[in-house]
Length: 111
Image 1 (cartoon, rainbow, N blue to C red):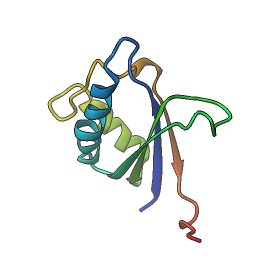
Image 2: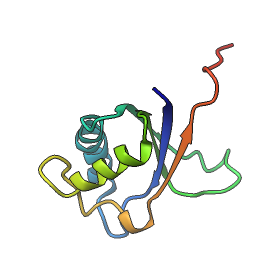
Image 3: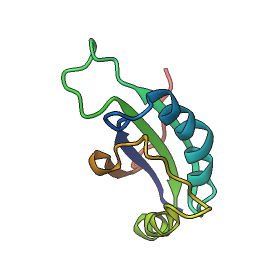
């Protein structure tokens, strides 16, 4: 089965509650996404602006995806958004979130 990483760049909504956004993302959203067929794990990161050349967003979530068709898995995920299976929050700036999907082409290297 092919392996992919889905990168989601996002921010808290302007005027939203950033603490609530992070709580929702970590405690509600990631578990909801990982219940969707094909999604096997996730981890979040916050940008280190001093060490970065540019800023796409303040937060990055990297989801692990194993699926014959990542498009189908992502389409299935999108069908659940806003339902009881994937509760959303107004504290995320959803309109400016960016999603990129990469297929794994090598095994991880560890030094």
